[in-house]
Amino acid sequence: MQKKLFIPGPVDVTQDVLEKMATPMIGHRSKEASALQRGISDKLRKVFNTKEEILLSTSSGSGLMEGAIRSCTAKRAAVFSVGAFGNRWYEMATSNNVPADKFEVEWGTPTTPELVDEVLSTGKYDLITITHNETSTGIMNPVEEIAEVMKKYPEVVYCLDTVSSMGGTKIEVDKIGVDICITSSQKAFALPPGMSMCSMSQKAVERAKTVPFRGSYFDLLSLYEYIQKKDYQYPSTPSLSHMFALDYQLDKMLAEGLDNRYKRHAECAGIVRSWAKENFDIFTKEGYLSNTLTVIKNTRNISVGDLNKKLGNRGYQISNGYGKIKESTFRIAHMAECSKEGVSELLGVIEEILGL
Ligand SMILES: Cc1ncc(COP(=O)(O)O)c(C=O)c1O
Image 1 (cartoon, rainbow, N blue to C red):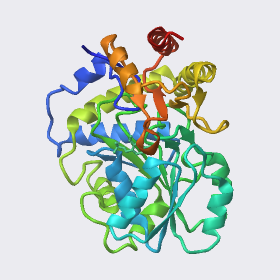
Image 2 (image 1 turned 90 degrees about the vertical axis):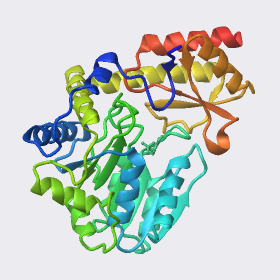
Image 3 (image 1 turned 90 degrees about the horizontal axis):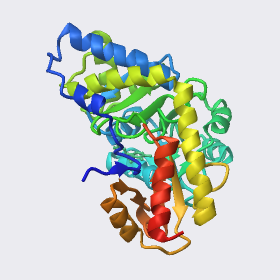
Image 4 (image 1 turned 180 degrees about the horizontal axis):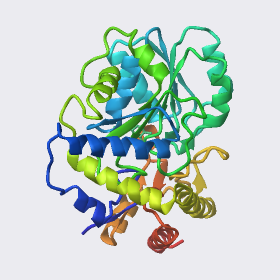
């Protein structure tokens, strides 16, 4: 049975978007491919609120994350972690022999501007990574406040993971001074997994030119230079099927109106949060709650596996907790094409199953 997905990616993809994946192929060295990919980058600039370049990658977001930290760290990276995906960025650095230190806070709490300031004031670092929306803990970090601190450190390249938030909440990449902002197709963009997108500032481009060993497939500088020279064609054969679907989905998102889309996400988040407070508790620190997913404290000690099995029989799926909070939390995503009616229906079914 096909289930309605309330997991934080992959999410439900509408039939018309799925059908775009079946568009007949074109040559990846054709004028049509250039026009398609150039058009996608232009539309993505509106979603990212950036005037900088956009890079498209046939990989999930992790590929661009690894590429960013490897391509743009000349001295040492400061990795700010608020959960599993921040930690992953640190592992990517160390396994690529990129000098890095990790600054991890207690799960459920944010990276504060004070911490960023304290770390950068040492002068040891020339790149930072921040997770905007930590999918393991439900934290949405205070990037506007962090932006104020970053103004003091213009030499530092700022990388932001917006894998589970871009497209679901407003992120003003240029205004908050982000140099490389990364996202994936399978979350708030409501596309199948397998594609990722990032912005790359001129500052990041110049930095990458000073880094001798940037790898190959995920060398962001080579992607950047290639699309400049070859009118938005890429060095390797991209997933053109994703390109067709992304182009179409971006038109739909812009037609919905980005502010309307963000409002819809915030409303769905509001419904799930008040339900969670009434029936369980929220794991994440108040004031830093994600608009695209809610991490709920399992205060009733229910078996989340059992609940999900019963939900599955009725055609729904939610997520258990992630990593070390697997048993003590569960997660409900409200992203992509979520609706107030859809989340209310899910919560009603959970109440029925649990007898709440
Ligand atoms: C916050 C965050 N960062 C990074 C990733 C990794 O992205 P991907 O699975 O697209 O490689 C995920 C995936 O769930 C995520 O939620």
